[in-house]
Length: 195
Image (tube, rainbow, N blue to C red; front, side, top):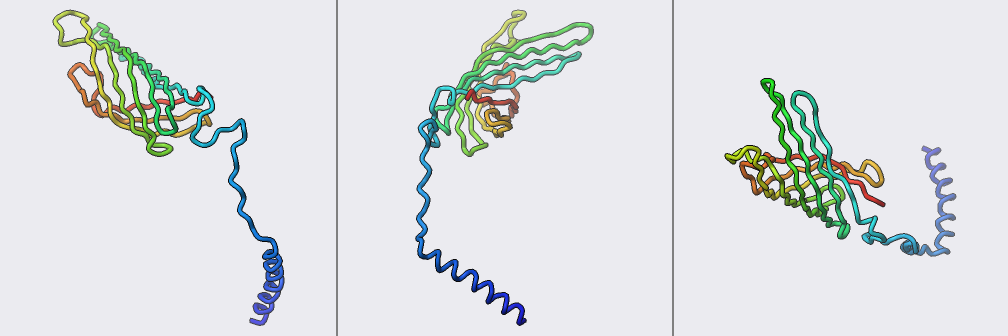
């Protein structure tokens, strides 16, 4: 017990003079750091390259059934929360059955708007116009334009300073018999910032 008291007295004799001398020099808060002339304040964009991103998805498999999907996008950040963009879609599907090969393509374009809810989660609305095979038409190899309104959201995770993985889930509110989508629609892709 005596050793503990002696230790506390020694500790107090070292700390008290330090604290007392520190009171002679008032502590002033550090001024907030100012952005340098070549840096932007949070929320600002300095160039068009900082606003533009590209990405999309590529998928497929090969064999007796072959499927290829190419869906590139180009987007523009209006501000840190809202972005909009355009995209394209090309799908090729073929299947061999009974010695015959059946093939079809789907192609078209889309526009989208995205709102970042948090750093990683976002909501998105997308409208696309796709040319699809019209299996309901009496004319062989006839095609039809199908309009789809996709509503949903997703998750974005950076894997480098300028690139992110994106997983999304949508519901097509304009589902028709010719729509190439079945609800829910799950998409996985990537985004790359140009700067």
